[in-house]
Image 1 (cartoon, helix red, strand yellow):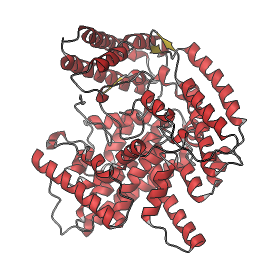
Image 2: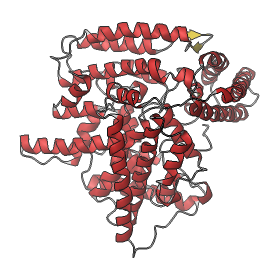
Image 3: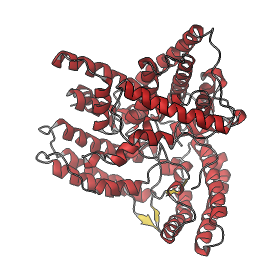
Image 4: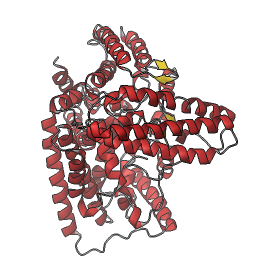
Length: 555
């Protein structure tokens, strides 16, 4: 299996969209449907098929005429959804109605505002060498992805045929991209050049891997490589003409938050929250450092053998802590999901931000790797709701996926995970500061108050101990992603805020209504059973309180 030389931020790509859609079509027993709910699930399947673009020469069609027709036809689907009245349904099924509405709003937003096919060259990246730790790729992606990480080399005949078919879509898609890319977003354009250069590198590596044994495959790889190189040259030629901003503006940002990702915060609210979290993290780090001033610094893994031994030991210690303290229900697939992602040793001069943490105490990232448990759960325990079974479109899962992963870091610290090694608490605050810094920078970038360079500089300045340096490829990757996908940069901290709020309110509700303490194990079980969906919808399902949703929808 091929791997990129670097591993972007907290995640190492995604489950292929077609695979996940087909998986969602598999029949599983469902709760008894209310009158009209079957109509919703049928419309959902029609919607998912509709969302796939038409094909021209085998490649998805993102031309102006195609997207104009798509938008017109989308309005008809939205009217049909609005005509379905879910008010008498069980809450779980009403939640599903809102998921479908949010997804349709996501396509509407992309066509009206984001327009990745016309503003963002990175949208045309097809070759992916790594799997994402979230249900689907972070950020906008086209509909003809080539997930190299799913192939085993040497290839079987069936796999070779599949790869050839995928590679054959690269030249026609990149030819069409030259007509489609008429936007004037300079930062997105310049960052997209680098993305497509990386695709060329991956294709060159693939060429070496497949060799000359299969002439048809070799030709397909070379044709895709030539098309990518020519596309990069064209992007560079056009770059001097790109002078406009890349942010979507505060009003559009707020509309996307409330109508697509179902986050009950405006742009200004998120700025206030992230400012507070950034200063809280820095202040808490200073207090931890003072508390631990007499302790020796944390040892740092200095060899591949030492790193692997430390990583595997920390997995065992983490799983034992969770089980012994009844933190969450332990499933057979949890430990293997971590062991598969322990990573490898990196020399000091090559370590990115997260490797700095993992070479000191890998457990600090195992808490964030709740992500991999989400994916393992989706595979091993598919949700009974067809609508929640696969990845939600347009990264609508971000407040839950990233919020839970980020929240777990601090929650486990407060629950006592590092009581026997207090210096590790400093790492947690460093990570919290870094997430707040990059998210706040992304907010200013979308308000067009920061360029991407300004956002990167802010990100570096407010990350403690110099762990995020200006020359790290991770830095550019993160700020490009957050500019490409509005709200993703803040979803870690905003989602964490929503997770913590739910834990506090649900615990109080159970105590008041049932006179019982609400355990962490109960919380995680309820949260996971709801699926990887927006936190506002999970809140409604667990508490029965729909006031947040009603406020966002104006109902």
